[in-house]
Length: 105
Image (cartoon, rainbow, N blue to C red; front, side):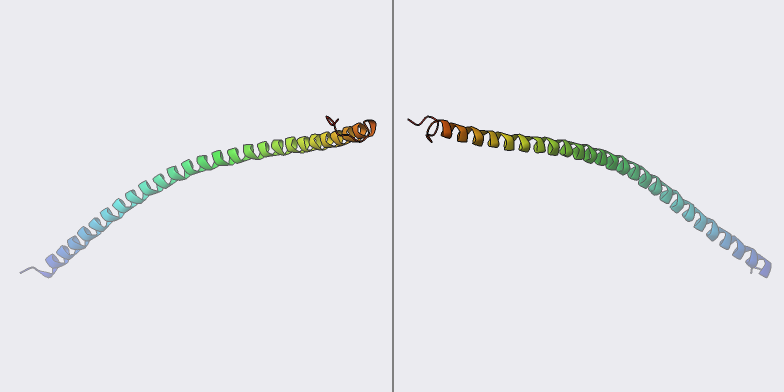
């Protein structure tokens, strides 16, 4: 029959063993969570790089659209001037040729 001192010692040993097992589980979880955190950081870095590339592409596209807009404005002005020139030429031709259209006999 165990004495009270022996039982007390066994109880302490049991509690220490349980505490040691609990600490091992906590350390294992901490190691796992640290690995997951590192993976998340790597994923976030890759995501940041991809986002920067997309942002740079959009900035380049924005510049290209501004250039195309400027070209469109110039072409519109040239088209307007060409239409006005053709209208003036047609009016002068009609006046100087008795109202006949070009190629009409």
